[in-house]
Picture 1 (cartoon, rainbow, N blue to C red):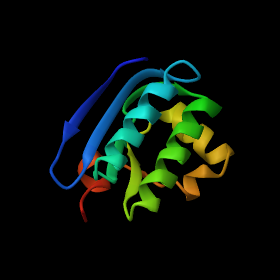
Picture 2 (cartoon, one colour):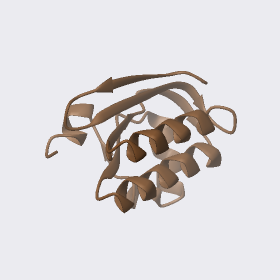
Picture 3 (cartoon, one colour):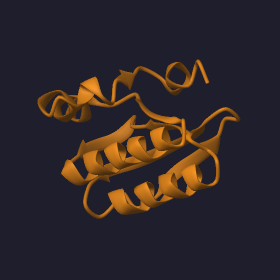
Length: 111
């Protein structure tokens, strides 16, 4: 995955990576999150429904994006993670920080 879909929902922006979210694919997504936050779009939902693998680089990009968004009074939320992503979040206890939402709409419902 080096590409991802992006959709501006008004109150928040959805980024939807596909495939593997790893050392190769995480930096472009992290860079886009940084650009969005710098441009005043600090409410971001990362739709993980099409991600079939995540490693520490992918997790690091999500955590760094979360930190950047929160520093600008925003937030980063994740939606629709698959089984492997959920397992990694649980094993690392990051499911307490990046609480997964079932859908993009649920993730952005109160923005």
